[in-house]
Length: 138
Image: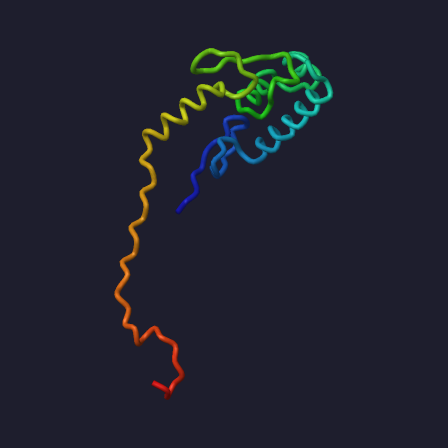
């Protein structure tokens, strides 16, 4: 089976898709940027997104994406986002805990539960075959 080839939306390079929508070089760059932002936020709690972007020279939108992806939590930053479902203020991700629970329950109600595999039929045993004995002494 041929690999699924795609163009990286960040750099335009062609790459073999493996579950991530960007090429390996851009993924490495993104991981490096994340480490820089994470370190800065850890060392400078309470910094705003704009301050983090200015100090790290990493685009604000990328920092906001780290927050939306749940890779960063706003406990160390002055930034809040809203739950996409109910509008409640949250510190990271796209949904609040309450909405996540409700969505999880809805998914469980739609997905059929795993059915118990039928028990294998047991055949009546021939009592002479399964008994241990010494050969020659029947």
